[in-house]
Image (cartoon, rainbow, N blue to C red; front, side, top):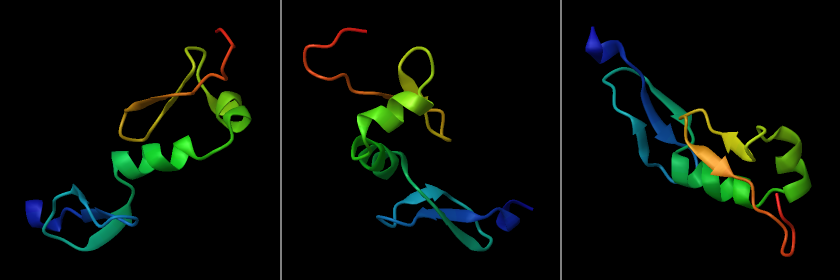
Length: 73
């Protein structure tokens, strides 16, 4: 039955996100997700951030929204 599990590879860098013996699907690895988020406007990230100033990825990893120089939380 474990062979039916999807193999997930990153659509950006081809890294294996989840091993599996079944069909291949595509997702995004943590490194590529963080790289993508870091290029988004800070204002947008703040609008989707949790009260602690982080955005949680599907993997559970928390991305800390950067602050603007001279700004305090």
